Image (cartoon, rainbow, N blue to C red; front, side, top):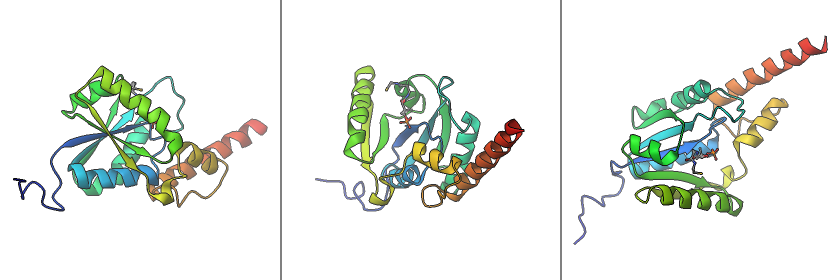
Amino acid sequence: MANKRAIKRGSPTSVVAVFPGSFDPLTNGHVDIIDRSVTIFGRVVVGVLNNASKSSLFTDQERVELIKRQVASYRGRVTVVSFSGLLVDFVKRVDSRVVIRGLRAISDFDYEAEMALINRKLSPDVETFFLAAREENSYISSTVVKQVALLGGDVSDMVPPVVERALRQKWKAKQSESRRTAR
Ligand code: PNS
């Protein structure tokens, strides 16, 4: 017989889920996946890939700091940790066996399925769960956000305010840099 307490609606389990990514920068799509993962799993570790070889707009520290500010209201149910090396090793280090990834469109699927299969090959205990993005976030990616913001476009519907402010600063810095080099 099903345990009624265990399936009570609205009471998340205490499973730790890892939501990994580059988050360069955090978008509304990411925020939605974090929000929904917390209600399902109870605790989420946002794993920010520290990839020295990948040229990112925001430094590792900046990306971590922006996400921390965004998730502060979760009061410890969401933690933000930078990681390098294999994702499955990081997942084990934080005592988890659950990886969350968002799927925006079918075009995401090939890459995501490949990653899930490689991770399972490396560590059969680790399960990947896919959450379908909300329709309004399906066109948003960190890449698009950076392109628009660094050309002075409005990204207020695509990122949380804390990230929008940080992008504006990057844009201003880029403008002063190009004025300096034009002289
Ligand atoms: O936001 P992204 O860039 O799509 O996230 C990709 C990420 C960080 C989840 C992926 O690159 C990753 O897990 N990197 C760690 C290295 C690793 O474990 N590679 C094997 C699985 S592809």
